[in-house]
Image (cartoon, rainbow, N blue to C red; front, side, top):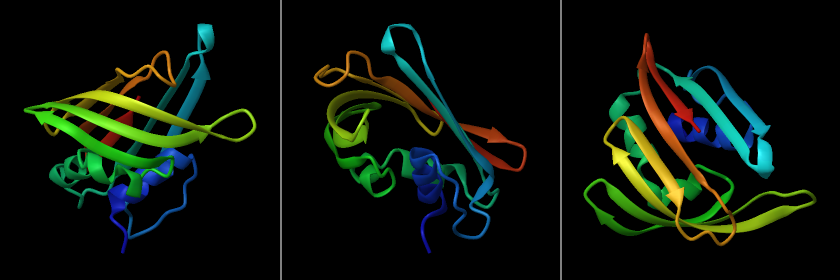
Length: 150
């Protein structure tokens, strides 16, 4: 059986909701995208998880940077280049939706972790994006956990 959090991450990345596993995702996967001034796109998403999934399990999947490509379909490669405490240098290659086809991208992310709470990241390479930043947040909620992506 697939890891339920991995299934939810894949669903969030694809924008589709196809339930897999026994009640892995609690409620729908919500994804919102909007274009801001200057051609900046903002994407936000969230999903709740079955209460049987521990916060520790959620954190272990979100922070398993070398294996994110197994869970997020747009990533071909994700490799930790350096780790120093709660700071991580992470290189990622992938392909995202372009106007007519998938557009390849490479980012070098500076990642800051607030253990078992939040992962903030921003691109320091600036090769394929002028601005690329975001976060994954893990939030306790009645009856389980919620994962929020921005």
